[in-house]
Image (tube, rainbow, N blue to C red; front, side, top):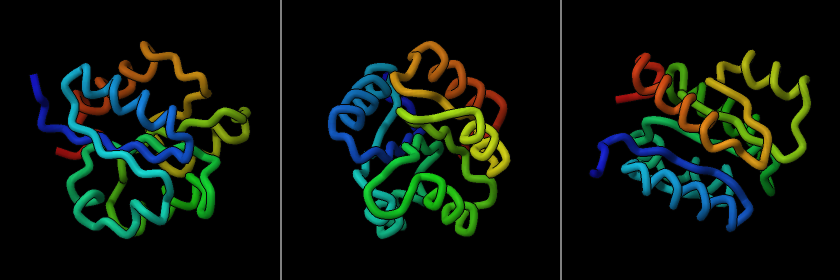
Length: 128
């Protein structure tokens, strides 16, 4: 079953990008993947059509936090899940204070990821 919700994944690691997009597609979500913040920001249609963003903190070029801040200037309350392989409690609180739905360490616990995704869509936090 194909769901209308489009989830945008931004991660500079190809294996993480493809793994997440394949996993989300297997659950019926439409996905779009980007290897950098700059490539996403240059695609207005992807931003406009995204229901939810999954963004890695450590990207080449602009960081995931900078990307999320940039998205908050374009979209009111962008629904985002921030992920990091090197996260700590400070990053967690920074992500939440920026307005992220969640901050998840890599390797990502799939059940936790889907719990946050389902909550975002059922609560209206995700964009229609």
